[in-house]
Image 1 (cartoon, one colour):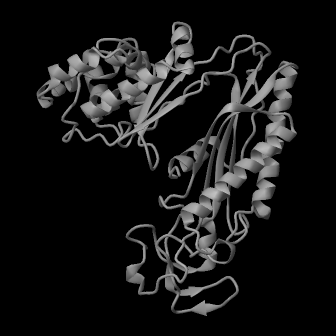
Image 2 (cartoon, one colour):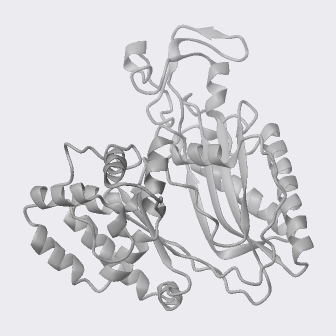
Image 3 (tube, one colour):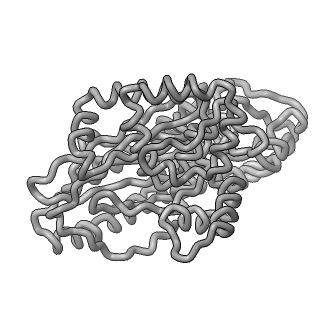
Length: 414
């Protein structure tokens, strides 16, 4: 909270803030966990000072700009190459429009070749139909860019932005034995009930939108779905499948079920929908630790020679002592019962919808660029004039949206 407050004070300005207070706030931000993997004693050798254009200049402290001049031995040649790039002004301005710690990531963490790569990819995007639309509208609807770490979760905690367009998000979060049928991609009773409730929540929002504007259309623009297996070896119908394969097939099946239900109630599926499927927390489609040698099944059957797996797909499984298994040193305490594994069989999803009045343009599709462990997200604000559908009923979800977002961030993209 202290770091977020400090960032916002510098970003938006506070009356009567003296130089001493500003320096103190800058120091907090320099040491802040808001900056992805930032270590003041180990910055990028290609560290840059604050750019002189856009809003990024006000987000980089003077002391860190001075440090860049000391650390980067090729500073002038790199700046010359970057600033002469045709996409430089657009990208730097877009990065400055971000509400996250993107400015710090660009200046402090990236290497020169990654920056050039992002500039080249940005130029390619600007030459596409979507990029040209964004460029044409940028005076009224600014282009926004965020840089985050790709892979397992985001290391920064951004201030919550205001929605670019009238819309809402509906979360889905369920874990346990009956989320999926054992060793199958088919959903089971608890996930079926959760999807039914999810559709009911959506219909409440749709009714409110129609009351505000009877001609409004509700469009699904993004779906992020994470599905996970426990680390028990796959058998029966899933025998030979890795955890990655089974979890991906489950997430794909949930996506098909949800989009089918949406179409049944009159929701438009955007042809440019952003679809993101993820696995569990471990990076291989699974979550949680391995089973222990001494293990009890749900049926009450006990064994002192429980087999384990490295991928979920070994037909015979692996045998050996607990010391050979991924436990407390990696994923947590080894599981001694099958009942303990059920919590790692889960489905978590966040589906986003927009509400538009007739005649409104389709929003510009975001561009995601991944390069050497970083992810650049380019997008444009959307014109909300005439929608007349900004107010929606407050629904208390069993799992709040921000919690679902954090859980999804911790899962790996397939």
